[in-house]
Image 1 (spheres, rainbow, N blue to C red):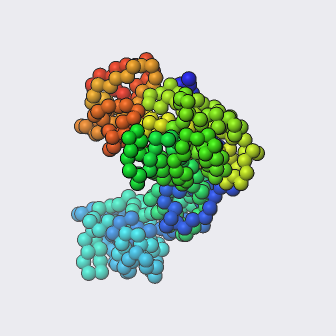
Image 2 (cartoon, rainbow, N blue to C red):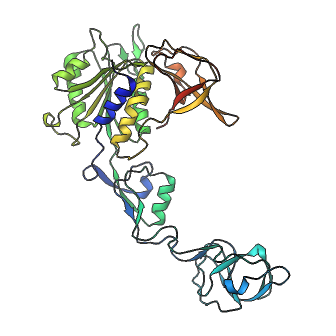
Image 3 (cartoon, one colour):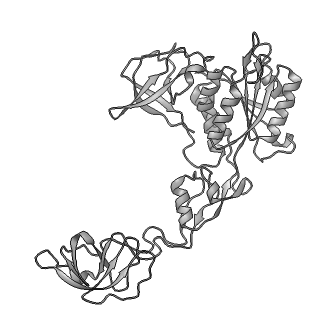
Length: 420
């Protein structure tokens, strides 16, 4: 049985990011939110496009006002008013100034802006009551960005700030990585769909819904393949289809050591290489991770070998193993260059946390900000792998390492925030 860290290393080493030539598409900027940029972006524009004012005030020559003060103000003639979007007509001469507003073009001859709060105006004259610094409140052309250099690098997630930059750079379309395709199905004779009447011994399949939601939140595309009975022929057919259409396959159930757990045997019959069969984690010990030789596959959607995750059947175990192992794999596959590894925090525990110490144990709960310090509050009720109910409204997993059986209230604990 592998340690959690060893399993994570194996999985991430197996993931090959999408190809920046073959796995890209062009999208409109308005639909590019949360996509991964596939190629670097440059712009032919300088930012700012021209020298402009950072303040409402007066554009002046510094040498005219450098000795100004309230007792002996410099008195300048106002020769022009320059709002934003207006091209100045005048060149500022000695003893002159222009009324200027934030964002407006600095007129020729001027090199400094005096904020209006440090002036007094009388008709067409302005009194400078305090000497500014040289070039104060002037945003110089190309001081933010120089045309022709890299504006944004490839491999970043496009959030609102990046979208704003691209809009300002007049990039209406751009190349992004396609969304990774993730096939999802559940196994087990005991499973029902949500619209079937509940019968004795049966349970409703929640795993597919949870995994589909998580996959969408990660920016990938879920491919829902339904429920597969504990029948080797039917299961082999679905697995073969899944690995032909997806980059990653997520099945839940059928990977333990019971008489009806067929997944590993079918993977071997399909010539898969099984890299992981069990992990030292609670919940989630039965975990299969496999890859396939692409030469054995027909009509593949990607040049990469599909990565197969056989997740446990219990719903809490499905979610924990997804957050711990699958999500980082999807992020790395997506083409993002950093931030795909799990990011843990050290926080204070509000509650007593216990485990048997035999496996790395994950307990779910909420992070709260208390007096400026993050604190983990364990969810109430059972932390059984079959208890889905108290996972609702949680946002973090507390981690008890192997050999650690108790973390007392107010002691530090490592947590994994549950973010996409």
